[in-house]
Length: 461
Ligand code: 4AD
Ligand code: MG
Image (spheres, rainbow, N blue to C red):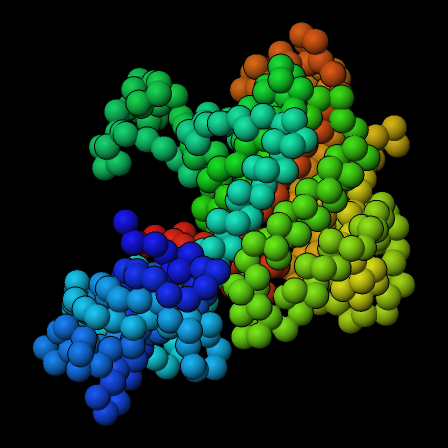
């Protein structure tokens, strides 16, 4: 196997043979010499491969190469006289592996992100999307590392489910019934009993309910998987398919949970800054000049915790001309979230104790009977990145909330059973993985931080 370009560029010293395999980002032909910028995606930098008439295949191969071709070069790693790179690669042989042609869609010029979305099969080869994918990888590994060292077990929660974990009815139906001619019962209604699972099923909106099962057995668990929402919101922060990280811990209250979220974000951001230095430098230079600074703010500053009531008073007193109204019982909009964290606090803000009427059925009801022990973590640029709560572990209160929200207790029988058999206080949150990738990279649109975005009207690739 060829050594990756990342490893080759990281060698202690020049000298020694090697093989470079990858795709041509650019090629420059001079008089009797050609410079090939070869990238294999292993790092931001490509390897500068230098070829001349002594290189085998120079006339037939090298001089015919164009952007986008894949090549294999054999030769030696040498000190580079050029600026901006330690090493370059002097090729003794260059072979064309796959040609690209004049119509290769990724030319040297800067393409818009909108255009790149239409060629999502090729965009990972661009600097920006390549860096996004490496940051996603590093962040994913850091997430696992964090929870493992905190004694949380990775629990695989299901993707196909019969229950609406958020009670919000934003689920995609999963069915094998023929759409045009489904079987009917005596009353003429679609006979769900004949569907694959013998009942209506959906793609999950959250692994939380099953994570609670795990927490009430293993004490601390987390899930990290694809999550689906059929909400028709065409915003720069919403996807129909995204990845959610959901820790759930027994004997945790809201305060413990807020502490966990803070340790978690600090850990993950520090690891990404450490492991993706070049990629992060690229984002700071080309995408968002504050990208690294604001990650450092999260790492260094304690988060501010503000009860929802107080947050509303602060917003009301701000004198800001917000587009959306503010008041007890109204959800915070992105403009309010961003103002609180960017202008008011200057650090991440955890808004706690929300009105129960705008939150999900499973949240722990506070003694005031008006609010629930919920929290949202807000950061600059993006707004809400985490939503979580202490869970209602009292059977009678939970049953009455389920009814009160127009849901059917029977549909949640096993969830209620957890409150019948050895119920304990517990809490958990959900982190939108793409939202933190947006925050870290400064990418404006969430569609550009996931390799294959699914949004209303869009499921290509
Ligand atoms: O606030 P949400 O809806 O919370 C839950 O689903 C809880 N069941 C999680 C839990 O307590 N285990 O979603 C959690 C996070 C949000 O803060 C947001 O970052 C992200 O998931 N999120 C989305 N990200 C991208 N596209 C969407 N459509 C999203 N909806 C939520
Ligand atoms: Mg939320």
